[in-house]
Image (spheres, rainbow, N blue to C red):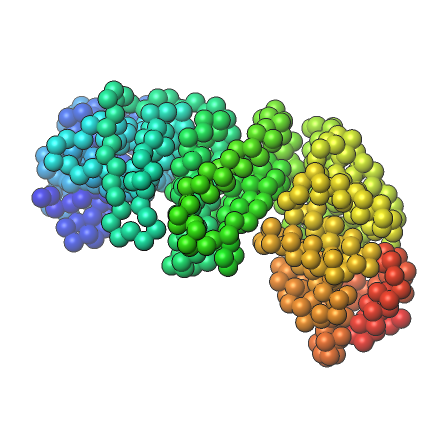
Length: 607
């Protein structure tokens, strides 16, 4: 056994027999990897220089190589071991100088599970410049490693080796399909396995699936994406050791396998989906992996929520709940999985027009998403930045319904935040919403924004009519349901509004602040002041709702805290006039306006 081990999966490192890091120049470590995988363990100086330095002047690259080799000789002298043998023309890895974690791929008895585990960690995960020769070479090696796993999966197992268990088969197949979505032979391995071989929920030792394919293919086919990429995210919401979480995870496994059989789109591998779920920058990963649809799953007590999000428009196109009952689910997992898969397929087929539109106009969709990100913060600067972005998007594409809807939302948002009753803003919002409907009569967001504009214009019946159209077009569109709820509250039907906004929150539990603001208002008008305060405390930026918070606290009996938030609100809005605001606030019945006025007066606002 060698004294040193070269680790290439994850961070590139050289360690000694005690697993302590050995100090070595990064370029020297890259050279060791290149020699380890070179034929005969050797490389010409010219090839090594071109590999390590991407420069136009090859003479400069050779000079850099000589300097690096000089530093390497010093490091080797300190180690008391020669790692690289250099002569005038060639570089060679010293015999038995190092072991490597790459060695396992040369071992025919190594388990597929171990190979997959290595690849998932990422060969040379951080190589520096993505355009460099090192990265291009590393990418080719990653494909070679995947090819080894593929051959191990598809070729008959040598005698004496353990058959592949189902979970390993699934993991390896999805890893390959993530890179080669049109590899139908690998797809068949996971979809064609006997369903009886799937591990039961409480199995300590899952059954195995023998993998034998009569005509193996030596290398994976080239990547050729024939449809959108879809990410099915693992369940979130409950601890992993919770029984419902185990049931849900098993169900999602079966849904993944059902969807894997579909050739109209490419499923993202589960390990990628897990990284997306855990990431703080989900939008960045979705863009990086070119994902068009996210199937988001969440646990809530005894049910599993499934949402389908069309990423280019940040639009929930489907949402439903599935009960999790251990007795029935354990017996009918596959049937439920196939039902969910069938629903997903039909929804994706109905949304195909929107996806094709995105393929033709990606710049417009990216601009729209940028505008939405500005709108995530309820401040005047962010709303006005969103307006500039949406207008820029409409210059790219003059009939883009989503951008017109976003533009309308900026006008109504400014009307609410400024609280000055500026009808010009609302008329501009109505005009933009009408343009959205004309450009996309089947897009629910246009009707949603028309309903919002008419609400603030005091046209309550017309607002409810527009929002009813939005809900019919997209029954699971949480933003439209939230706006509908808000209009019901202003139409003096707060109990119905509270039921609807709670429905919207259940569809989009991590939704924007407006959801909780609206739920707080509905709670206030049904006399549930503590519930109103709880909803307001869930807002990421509660400053925009300090006025309602002050009124709720006052009605709950906490005058001191209510006055504190009244002062904070007036600091944000020094021109605020209670009389003017109540005059323009669109509320149908007198009792509701008086209840709000009572809370504000108790909080210390002057009439």
